[in-house]
Image (tube, rainbow, N blue to C red; front, side):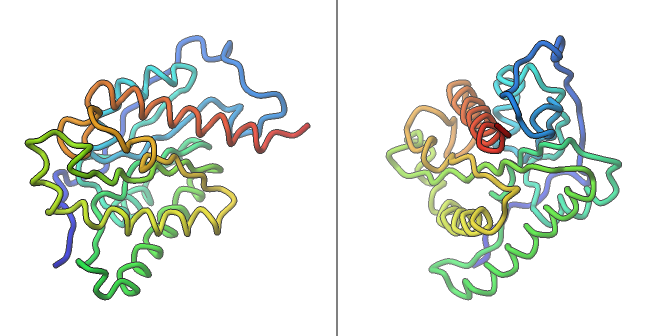
Length: 226
C-alpha cells in the first residue's frame, strides 16, 4: 500500500506578512547574513498552516513569505517553486507528511531513494531562488497516548510512515551544512497539542512556534563569527 494524501489545490500559493519595526529586533553578534536579513520564507502544508497565527506572532521581527497549501508534496513544491522569482535567505520547511512509502518497509530502499532525490531537488531549487539556510520541521510521530480519543483510528491510515520520513530527514541533516532540523518528533510527543493526530490546536501552535524560533536562534549562534 502506498501512503500519500491528495493535493487539494492546483497552485502553490503565497502570502506575506511584514514585521513592523523589524529594524529594532536584536540578532546575535556576528550572526550570518541569512539571520541578519530578518526575512523568512515558510513552506507549508496543512500542518504548519494550522499553526500559522502562532508562528507569525512568535516571529514578529521577520518579514515572512508563506508558500504552500494543504496536502503539498515535496516534488510539487519543487516544481512550482521553479517559477518563483525569489525566496528569503532563511526557509522554514514544514512539508513531508504527504510522502510515498509502503507498509512494513517493503521496497524501502526504492522509496527512500525517491524521497531523498525529491528533497535534494527542492533544496536545489530554493538555493537557486536565494535561500542560504534551511530549517526543516520533522514530522510528529503520533501514538494513541498523544492524540485525542476520537483521532486514534487515524493512526492506522498514514502515521505509520512518518518515522520513515524522519529517518530521511536525519540523513539529510547529517549530509548538509545548510540544513538544521526542528525536532517536532520529540517536542510534539505529548498529548493536548493537536485537534486530530497531526494538526495543531492553539497550544500546539505556540509550542511549534517556540521550537522553530529556538532552532533558528541556536543555529544563528552556532554560525556566528567571534
